[in-house]
Image 1 (cartoon, each protein chain N blue to C red):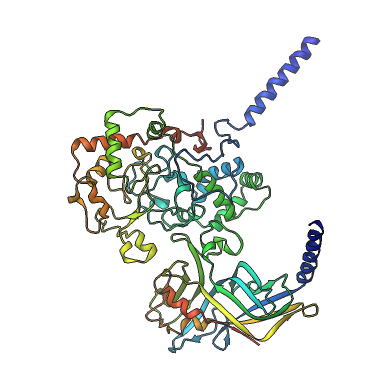
Image 2 (tube, chains in turn red, brown):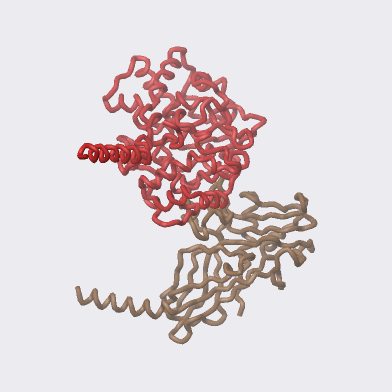
Length: 350
Length: 239
């Protein structure tokens, strides 16, 4: 009798344990308040986007993550933000010159990586977007990317009981509006911070560089850092990098935003962090390999008219110098960031 | 110090109590010239004699300022979305108006630069109102859409989407309207009304007469400030 009771209690515990582990969130995807702490890396400036009016919480961040990876953000439920912003590529689109969006339509620009976004003052290659929160409206409403409206996304979310619960959990009431959707996405993308590459470790005395990498850094600082300013590897300016305009795309870049002719053909200087992973390169993805980019810059005979004058400082580089710069650029790969579990797709089967 | 604090809080409360009961309603009455605006139906004429109908007329006004002779001006840093197609949006109810005699009302047509850069917002500034440009962040301050046989756009439509808060394409325009008779707010006159005529025809004339044949689409900075200069005088006080 006593044995029977013990046995029953034991079985009950086993069952309870199984049930609880079944319903419990996979710890790989669990976001805690520690996960959403904003830590400014050593040597980084003050961020431009501060989360002041968008308080970071695990609930809102998790909601933003789910939205980022959800196809329902597109008109026919086939494309998510994560379709073109891939985690393994620092959220660029690996091996895609121009991205393809909904209905297999081809875009007009190379997908930029998503990292260290809160240090940027404007977004997009032409800097047309002035606040990180309103950036997602562009791909969402673009007829060649997701072709959806904010109003329709709100309808879809309101009729989805998982989302109704998630919004309630995140915001303590049942209101679902564009402001909340956009702010949740901003928490997710705003915390994508890359600051733990070998370069960072080297600067902090936690790693060593080879002779080639050291020489590459020296050359980089002398020839490239005017525009690709450390530690963010961009000065956030717009420049003409001397590549010939593509006559099929006819993309005038910054000029379209300002309406000022001298801004034609200027594009935002991109960061070089994780550059190894974000191929192909340039605003239209015309260069397949990093060495193609280095080759372009290292010979002024390649420059087209209107090129930024600072490029002439680079001068002709020897093959060894090119190799060294290449070696240095590979030290900007940040595996901590690329494999950060917080940014993984929660729908993925583990 | 404690006594002073009590006295101050008391006086604040009594003042708030008075003003909470004082309302001023601003009513926006849409016209085309001397005719009342009716969407999609009435055929109007611009000052070049070209016919047109109006399908949409929407705009933002912000930062209302009422000038009080006693110096206690009323200021409201808020944006209102006014849409011909939604009756309730054409009345703005201002609360807690300090007592006094008001001589003029000022506001801006559009959205100030701070609110153009403030990220995701709700209410009047929610992008779902379709008064927002995503690709070149900023609010569309005014939309006037319709049909004109002279227009060479497909379907003979015309579309004026005017916005822009940065120089040289700044389309924010300041409006100052003097009251002919002072607007008095006191214990007896607690519910006052300001009637404003909004003349859509002004968008198409003075300083520049719009020829639909030559210009039927303004949807970015091109020609935008020209239209903004036109709409800057579309508001007048109705007695």
